[in-house]
Length: 269
Image 1 (cartoon, rainbow, N blue to C red):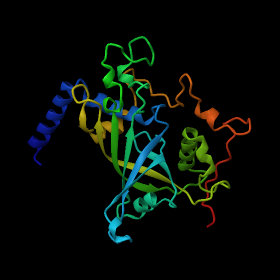
Image 2: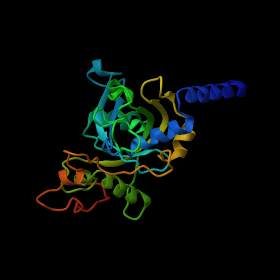
Image 3: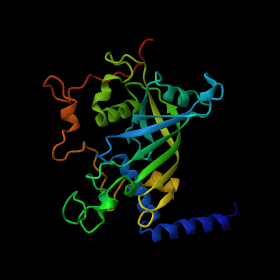
Image 4: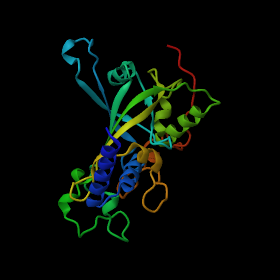
């Protein structure tokens, strides 16, 4: 690809973003902010592919998908994940040549949870009544596909990765019961980093939101800051009629903060 072709492509992407009402920087910021949205609970769909030598043979090349926890613990948009190789999905990803996988991350599909872009001005998280009601659902909200590769982390109590492990449990308090070395966990687990190599975003309906690839430099640089330049909050979804995550994961009247101590050694198999 020549420099002139690259420049033309960049200008085309920029003009398309402006036509949709979103600049490339806004697209990257809004996409990154979805990672810490309190309404999706840090859940994504991990997808992998069955290997060419897998038995039974009819599964070879087929895609396996399943829901997994993630935590946005890296400033550059990579994600921390807790892999349990008892899952065939994880085994596919961890034993593939490039440890490649994809993550699908979507906005809350509940029509009663409006996309933050379309809140009624001055009324908190209320739907703007001037917008058509048929735009409230999932097709009008943003969703991401992250293409990347898995890196298995070696965790020690005195290194940076132990802080990442604590970050993960801050997002998913229940996960402390199946972290590496936990006495509660029946399965082997290991910390992994999902290194993002490409991001495809569907911002909603194409007449008002961009649809396409996000520049990876923009993704890594924007850090999940919305338009007001304040970091998007990471907290449980709390709305009338719903219990907080802290309440749901509190056992026997104890505080949810009293989670088992993290262990950073691998369990004996």
